[in-house]
Image 1 (cartoon, rainbow, N blue to C red):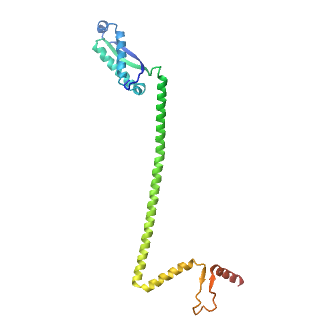
Image 2 (tube, helix red, strand yellow; image 1 turned 60 degrees about the horizontal axis):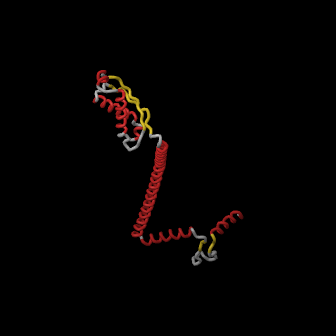
Image 3 (cartoon, rainbow, N blue to C red; image 1 turned 90 degrees about the vertical axis):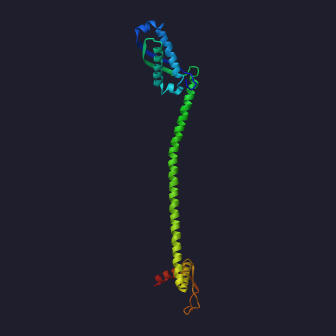
Length: 223
């Protein structure tokens, strides 16, 4: 074959007499000559054809090429024969190596199956990975927008406070102090009362907030 393999090939040649004079007088034993020419033509075509093509998808092309070449040779020899059809019967490796050849064919089939499975796995995994990457990117962009917007809002708020401070420093500073103390006391566990004030006489120095709430509840029940 064209890829340096060996095959055993049989074919059937259908023919008829085209010119009786040439058939009878130009070629000795025309049927034998036809057989030899057909074998030579088939060898010539097979020698230019890969083994897989000859055994599978190009069998008809091999037969057609054999017919054309055979007819050309017969016409050159003026054999008076018209070949109507060439049919390939079998194209097989030699019997001595057919088992090894079948092993090779099975290995190629396994290779193709593994390649198809790998491609199917790739087709399944890659879209999921791309989708996950897109999701992560979208979440990152959303987080970026959130952080940037919060930062811009904080900056604008600070700038507004600063502008107020420039206009009325004492008032703004006192307001900021009160807001800060208010935030701190919200989290405090005790309330401190300044006894130096005019209403501080006799007042408990501090009172637990939870005790204060309990005291309110007890007063309501006593009432």
